Image 1 (cartoon, rainbow, N blue to C red):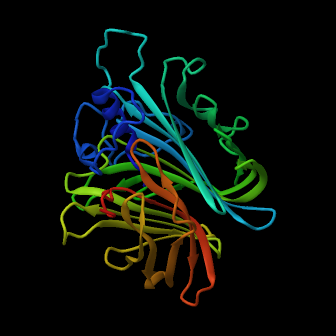
Image 2 (cartoon, rainbow, N blue to C red):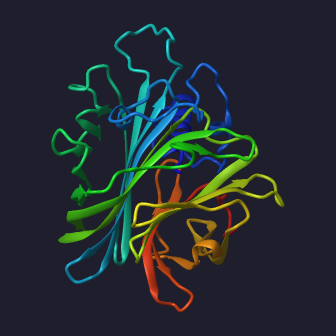
Image 3 (cartoon, rainbow, N blue to C red):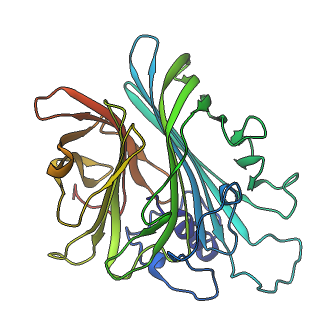
Length: 373
């Protein structure tokens, strides 16, 4: 599950101009709960179709292509990469416009590298276009490519895999090739991911089996890296319900080769239960989905980051699957200091005996500022 941040950024641009350094807004994601029947709606009745669903879905309001990678250099030191392209529709499909050359699709990209002892994050904006050959940003299905300027995630030939991801900004750069001989996985109910007990959700699939290899450039050094990567794809027109304010999302590469995805959407009101989902994609190709109430996800350590009190240590217990995991931030300061900021970074996983049990990524949104005041 990935954030609907582009819609919030878009509103700030429309209402407040294009100042990227405007005052940070409140941690309020209510806009993502606004319904608009003029857009296409996600529902369990639609089956995903490939390769078409690798590309953009302009009839839906929000969409993202989201890559994270847990990497190691030749000395065994840990690194992390995040590359994300968001798409947001300016107006519902079929709306008339005065300027036929003006695209109704806005794109935003995030790029971040976590070094063993540092983290830097960047953002860009661009407008889509009707002609992929000249558009500043966009996404095509076959051959697959998602890009904003020269930040690019694209197939290397006529097949979807392998992929190559590239980005560079202010002395930080990434160039990785991503390979897999495994099929992608459909999240939720055959690709429909419910996000609230009362219904609603998104289309969601992942490729969690990617092997990554290439180079990172950070703080004046270029390092050869390799490791594991996870690609998420999600699109929707109403991401949250009005009583939800933020989420905690985990993608874990377990040491035995299994892949675990878990999220919880936190309620606005104290005392209400979050809506959660947990699935284990096993190395042998089978899948185990957690029953409601059969698993627990609880914070075990808090820290102040960017004037917010954040849970940077977690415990995940799922007795049915034999899992009791401690999840810790690999580096506390993995704050995405972009227009609508959030915490996203690499994590380390250990078992009950303290032994290494995996690595992964964690995203947290909707935690209000003001913790240090």
